[in-house]
Image 1: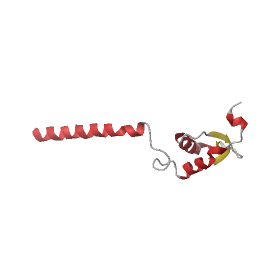
Image 2 (image 1 turned 90 degrees about the horizontal axis):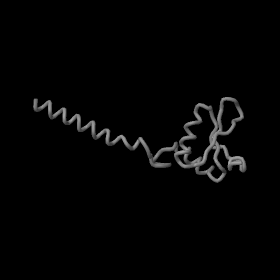
Image 3 (image 1 turned 30 degrees about the vertical axis):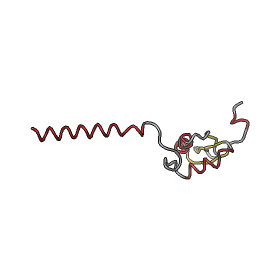
Image 4 (image 1 turned 135 degrees about the vertical axis):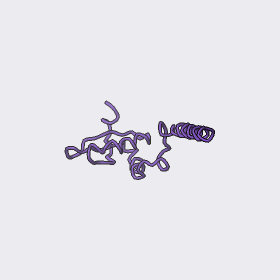
Length: 101
């Protein structure tokens, strides 16, 4: 038996099943245990968290998971800066070559 079976998890979001990934991912990025539960209607999903995380989960979801409010962005999103630098250097080199030739 896992922890989810031993205690009742609290629903923090319910909506169309296709939209459930957004709040699910926001809560996972905030390191909040999360699971999809069964909603009352077909085609809908319920995002659930342990009772001790319910308040924090609602705060994270109400902030929209914005990095400045919930968590800093970590991962591929932070790696775009070196690519921008490379593109700027290539453009500058092409510009200098155009002036010289």
